[in-house]
Image 1 (cartoon, rainbow, N blue to C red):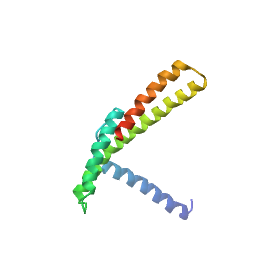
Image 2: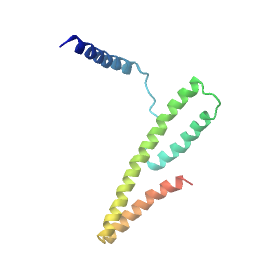
Image 3: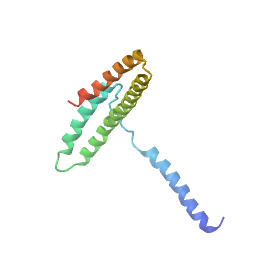
Image 4: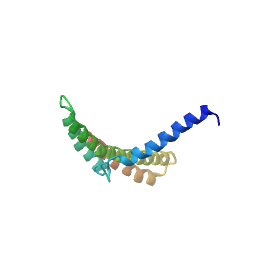
Length: 128
């Protein structure tokens, strides 16, 4: 290996090692409020969005505000992840309704349609 190749390789190795060191020095992170259901996720979004809004309304954000916002984002991220999972499930259920209706499978349409509406109504009620 020539000298020109050694330097970039050394830099890459040093960066990789330093990233590992910094990652291990990070303080423990918050877990945030869990969202085990769609209803809980929507409630958490409402609660933690309001808290975030209150902090953001300040004319200037202090370091304490930044730390508080950082903590709030964990609960918000957990809630959004649950909503994402629920939306994927909702879309899959609607697709079952769609495909069953194409095949004229009445009982399947009725069962899956009711399941779809129950979840969809939960989402729509949160928007009111």
